[in-house]
Image (cartoon, rainbow, N blue to C red; front, side):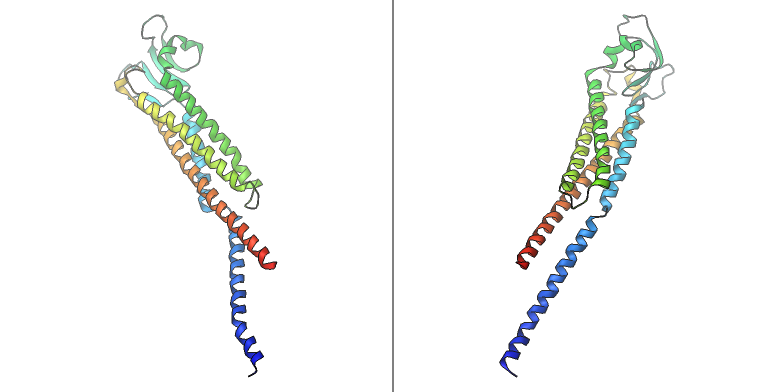
Length: 250
């Protein structure tokens, strides 16, 4: 066998291995890009958690059963109260400065309850109203951003990873604000310093809805932040692969 033929035969295997290696690398890169264009399973779970959070938080925000009487008293002065509405039975101000009694459910900011402002709007309750309202508002902001993720952006867009991160951060901020609200109300809502007959008052179902909604926000926020991390790594891999391809061609 001639020396030239042997050299050609000996150099063939490395060429074949290199070709196969390059083809496998390119196939994996394309597969990764194809997978990233569809909505991942954990993001679908995050969407479901956002829906649960919205449902439970809006119900908690608008209903009047954060605190309620247990029903053991025959004529309780206090029936139940939420963030914006309260129900009472012949309730007067503690000092009896006004010859006015309130029976039935009333909007807490109505003029009928002006003489009970000192009783109702204690600092802790005003803080709960503020923080849970901010929780609800920031949740709405996150919900507005979700359609942009679904319809307007993809992994190839420059701001795709940033959008994922923003949604996750907004959800976590909303959950944190809601956490402050439920912790404060849980600690002070059924105390002796607020509603009458405090021994017979308990945290009711609207409060439980608030807790479930806030927990769902945490889950959704964490999942969006995880996805932003994944997409950030994939973006770096695509960029490094593109740079390698350009160097190979050069």
